[in-house]
Length: 148
Ligand code: DQA
Image (cartoon, rainbow, N blue to C red):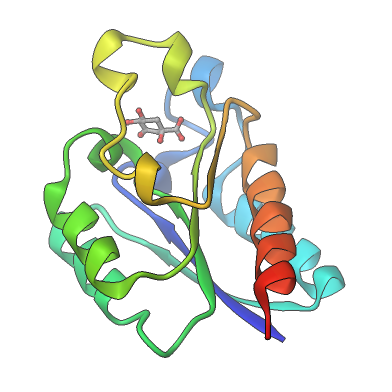
């Protein structure tokens, strides 16, 4: 069974109330429930984590080594800035899918660049809460395809 960590960055704890026209009305707890249900039918095990702190996200990535087969990462605003998070992903070298609820390429120019994307297996952006499910399916298929 694949073990997958889902990492959520700053302000995603406010989903449901925060700019619903951009991010929808589904709360992070509801998304967690959807991802856990989907993971069960895909035969994957989920660990779920949200933090507003860059260092805590770096710690969570460092802790992945030997503990998870892959990760889904919505680093939120840190996507666009955090070389610390990029370095942690380079150090740990775990397969991950970068995901976003909104289409970052259809937004302000400063959101068009991700400092993580070239390290990712792939990117899912713009499908609202469904981005989590699409990213999960993509990652599980990739892990199966590359499993010994
Ligand atoms: C986001 C996009 C980021 O640019 C933004 O800072 C977020 C959420 C998304 O899921 O669409 O907080 O990662």
